[in-house]
Length: 212
Image (cartoon, rainbow, N blue to C red):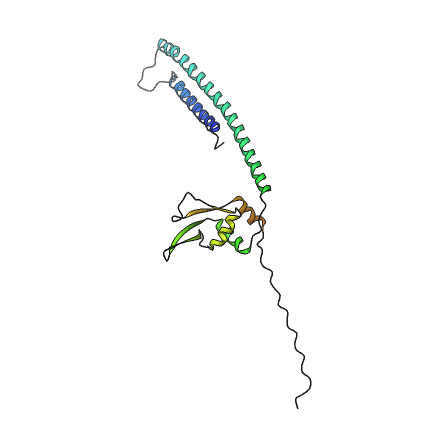
């Protein structure tokens, strides 16, 4: 609904209708003849004055209340249509998310990639700094963890991270871990190279006999 023009127009009509209903209710209260005990020092109105005031107030109140009822009815209808639109869009988004998850398999991560992705989940920036007159692209995480540019590019190539290219590299482009990257952290175990077990060298046979 957030990106739908019809949904936004419907929400605007609901807000407008409820505002008009509130305005009509306020005018109905304003037309109220306020019958009750008069304040001290103010003389009570006679029956003729009260009758005249009622005759003027009742039609105005009825008209304003009728207008408020109509506006609230339109707002209620708009709310039902809006709720239905939101429900449909949420269901569509969930289906799209599920379909994307099924279509994009989780890529196995190396230990270095796993550590880098875990550090970038809390935020990071891709920026370019000048070193010896040359531009050097670096990655800086918000937690101060160092990530090599080669590791970052491998993660970006697999669609696990993205950078906000609307910002200059000199100011730092915000890095975001994608949904695929989050699933990779949840489902993948870092692959490490198998550790070679060093064979214990056999003890050399004890030389028998003594040198003569």
